[in-house]
Image (cartoon, rainbow, N blue to C red):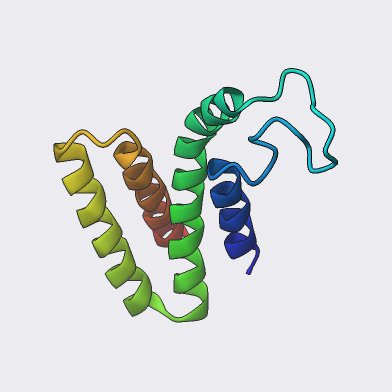
Amino acid sequence: MPVVALLAVVVAAALGGCGGSGNSGTGVAVPGESAAQWMRFLGEVSPGLLATGSCVLVILLFERLGHVFAVVTATVLMFVAAVGLLRRVPCAGALAFGVIIAGLLIRVS
């Protein structure tokens, strides 16, 4: 459930719901806070969040539902990452990295 809440915050920030319009929700303009700064911040943070999210997803599936669900999900995520890498999608490498780290952690444990 915390992963869903984190994703909701990231999506809200990407859509401008977390102060992207220049105010902090109080109706008072905050100097230095603009949509361009939020987009730059999300551009820098999104690969790390994507890698972490994919790693956590595979590990949680392995722990909660079993290895079959984790392997199927990891295979699908790696296929999506491979297609993204071939099409030069910016964060596809981060997705693949997260799934690979999850696989290594599961294998070692």
